[in-house]
Image (tube, rainbow over all chains, first blue to last red; front, side, top):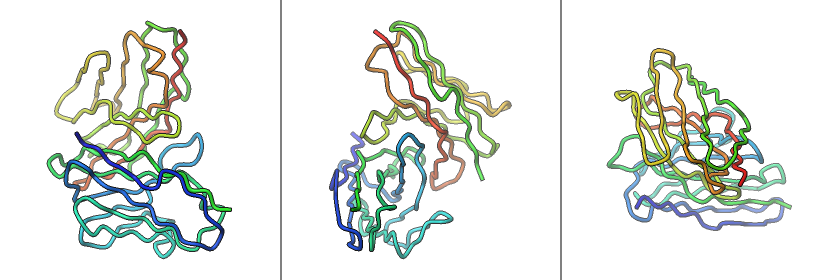
Length: 116
Length: 112
């Protein structure tokens, strides 16, 4: 149980385009989902917290107009990187908090974004 | 805010030996401490977690200990196997909505 999926797993795009990443909890309902960014050989950096049906809460230094987050249902959250630039290239990982367990977070497999 | 320090950054052991990774946290309000294993190119996988009302938890070869007074917690892996090789992250959470603060990670290498 507690499976989180992400799509796509890898994406290459041209500079200036937008990219949407989906995060789904497959076998549980998630009232809260989190989006992280991870650079090579570094730890996970929280970008934003997404609550179903409300606006996301962004961490300090994260541009909310550049990283659009939508959490329309208890099983789906999306992250859209708008007007992507090469410096946005990174590994993006989502996690979902099990509604039944107030703290446990399960992570998706990640999305590798490369902006050319 | 919370700050989590993790040591060592790299750990190399022989197959069958034990491995210990330690973390300290700064916020005394933190009450949930998970450990994640991350393999190359994949997302983190929860391997064990502990809440502040217990001092130790064990799951087969993996155990976690928590010292709330000293604000540190440790991951213990016994009888290590090559497939245990990965990056391990500790984390701490003290808020009601479950925001995690991660340690810097430990690269564990188990030599056959």
